[in-house]
Amino acid sequence: MIRFDCRLVRPAFVFDAAFEAGPGITALFGPSGSGKTTAIRLLAGLERAERGAIALGGRPLLDTQAGINLPPYRRRIGLIFQDALLLPHLPVRANLNYGRWFTPPAERRIGFDPVVEVLGIGHLLGRRTDTLSGGERQRVSIGRALLASPQLLLMDEPLASLDNARKQEILPFIEQMRDVFAIPIIYVSHAVEEVRRLASEVVVLDEGHVVASGQPAVVLP
Image 1 (cartoon, rainbow, N blue to C red):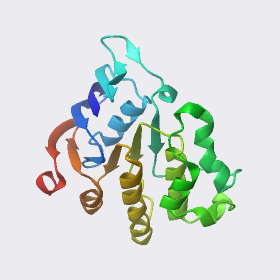
Image 2: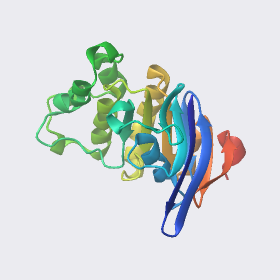
Image 3: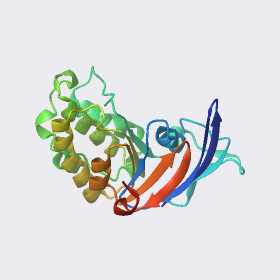
């Protein structure tokens, strides 16, 4: 269970939102500038809330009242952005293993072979990352995040930079990843059909506030 309640004030924008998320995929949905990425950055520890509390599985990541603010590397959270951000000087296999180097051996719960199989990237292991298609790059990025054995995955519009054909190619892999590895996922998107297909719960943000939450069929237009 993820519990989130944070306030952050910027010039011309006040973010003040609270929500909970359980197993499966919880989508943060709303127009550009609604605060979706701000919530992701606060969860990851890339932004500091003026007031707030974040807990993951009962473990406090942030509690401004108690003076707790774990740095990003101690939060055990995987990040996946629009740009795959792969390391161009390393082949696919080394990119996949990169995240594991920062995870203590005793905490490596997810094996290399299952990730490769679920994401269908076995044939790419020896390739240079600059020879991959956009969809292939994003699958490798997802694999790298999974191999760090995170307790939570944050996916910030991971398909936004792909054309429709590549989106349709990668959506089944995200569904398989959700079902096989059972890691809770916070998924940011403003694409209605994408959210309907993937998410079990939706949190709707507008101007930095939660305006609705519930199952996709109930809260989406």
